[in-house]
Image 1 (cartoon, helix red, strand yellow):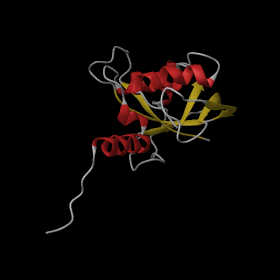
Image 2: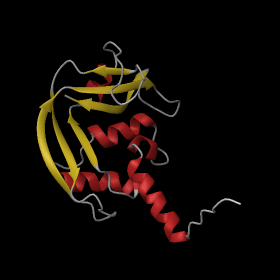
Image 3: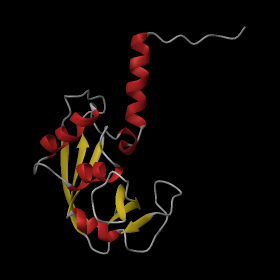
Image 4: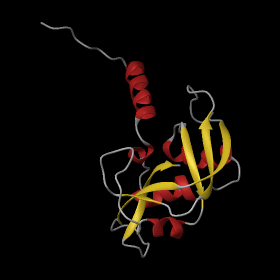
Length: 159
C-alpha cells in the first residue's frame, strides 16, 4: 500500500492560503462582481490617492493581501474604447482577446511590502509612472448594466 497524505485542519488552511497567493485576482472575484465590475474596482476606480487605503478596499473584498496591483488613471469608458482596437495575443496567456492602448496614461503601482503579509495587515509601496497598457476584453455578462458589447476584464500588462 502506498504512502498516505494526511493534512490537518491547520495544514489545510496553510495550503489554501498559499494557493490563494498563486491565483490571479480575477479567479478570486468576489461574489456579486462580474468580470468587468471587478476589473473596474481593481484597476480604474482608485478610491484614494494612496495605495494603502485604495488596496484596503480591494483586499477587504477578497480577504487577503494582493501582492501587486496597478491602477490606471483614466476612465472606464476610455478603457472600454481600447477594446475596439485590433486584437493581439495576451502576454499572460494564449488568448487573442487583448488590446493595446493607443495613448499612455498615468498609473499607480501598489507593491505589497513583505510577501508574508496577512490580511488585514497589508501595506504597500507606491510607484507612479506613465505607460501604455494592454487589456483583455470579452463580451459583457448578462448581469452587466453597461451599454457596451465588449468590456475590459483583465489588465494584461503595462509598457
